[in-house]
Image (cartoon, rainbow, N blue to C red; front, side, top):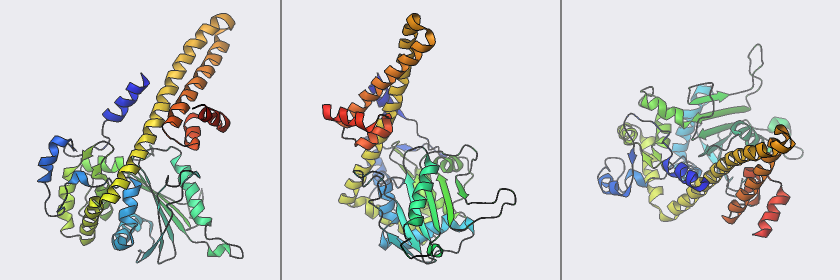
Length: 371
């Protein structure tokens, strides 16, 4: 039952991107028609063959490439313009591809880390799926970048400001409808800023697309809106393409050289076979992890139901309260161990299995040795 539920979840999930016209479902039968849609901007491939820039690998290959430095500067300035910082004139790239959370997951995070001409560090993280505890994760990664340059005999004055930019493919804050929110440290009563070395940006793509559908965005006069709409235009997670966004950005690009360059470099990147295979591999891994977590949630729900039923039977003998508690505990344990076996069989690493199931490392290693 769980597998069928999971299949329904992964194949029938409703698109969370709502547009002013129905997005195209790019099944194979539509590909021939879409080949004829290449116009002024894309010359060699249809929209459907563009990488989804919300996948961290694709984002970093486009915006983390030295040859594309000029468009990265424009993109970052569009995000930072509201915080009153000086405009960025130049950046240099730092390699953080081995910034994985676990020793055997070196590619788990493919962040973009740049240093500006004002000696500020900017860390951009793309979250394709909801990993939960996003605020704490961002603060944790920010702290690592902030303290990284500090060596022995260095002064704290030498620490550089660090700006964290989080681009999220899901909604995070229920308190606001704004798709772009920024955060600093302020005094509680008089509301003056404590320091300028800490700055957080959260961009929620679902809210952006909702604003687009409801005609609350003007990409002609809002530089950030046009760049973020470019990120939202291709949605490989839900097999959707937003042609109305493309048409408007195509017109804007005739007057915006940076945007036009970004599209051309995006097309070139998506046409490179080696890069596209690496992108597909990364996309598959992210989707597999999301499916595994969803399966864990479904199994936990089933275990809770079975535990309650078992608890009720036990309660007839030893008392309802104690029986339900014991039954739920045993049912959840059995379900978690079964999830662990499936994840390990599918090649997931031990740390990931621990995170998903909540089992101890010793128990996960025991299960692994039994396989």
